[in-house]
Image (tube, helix red, strand yellow):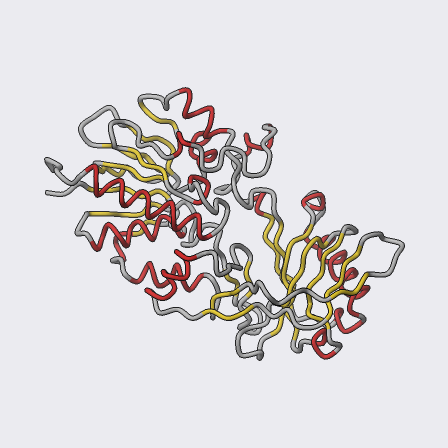
Length: 358
């Protein structure tokens, strides 16, 4: 018999690991705290059926493993629209500077939204292999079987693969025996991708910025917008602007942030920006299953400890493996990193259990 693997997190790494191990005839199941799959990939289609990305979005030619996976899943991608004039706001009292962005290094987006990747991965698993709304609080490695306690039930497995952010794992799950001190110190101070980001999308009935020869690309030191881009769909029948706003606005209410974002868009693109269909935002620091409240008390810099060697090692005599984009030695913080971390975990398991007694 082959071992049973409990995978924590139904994001890109978790579902890809589940797919790969399932294809190798291992018994796997995925435990997810949220009420949806995807993790920090979230495509919102609620307004005019316009797919806007509240999480992971762009990739390039250098992200070779992601491109391979898209081909494997038979998913198409298209080039991010960047034609026309881009805008840069250096100072609040000065008009925005106009410039052209070089087209020699294009970025790409997944047709239909990034969540298509997760939906296709989930389709290759059985319905009873993914458990949503399950918040893992305790993992006991002291017995022959590993026991995982959640908010509603207890699971058992031979091995656990965590693909949730290492800091979240170290802060929110009580392990028996305790995690090694050196690992715990690294994990708690590992930067979590998107943990302090606020993503905003504004949907429109028409791409008025294109009509004025603007690309929709904005960089600003003024705020609240820091980066914005055209988020129209591949067929150019659904239109939106989407990007990031400064984390310093997280203390405001959603309505206050919305008013400031729309005011800035009107300043940049004219009064047409006021005629929007919807405003959507995700304040990732408020997401309980992305950033633990204790992390706010730590002085962690971007990408700190990402790809650390201690995050590559299996613990508890090969009964706990760590994946997820923060554990990747390359492209950490990107979808590419999540895929490379998944590939590493699967290869390690193949080696570790090649001559298994299970």
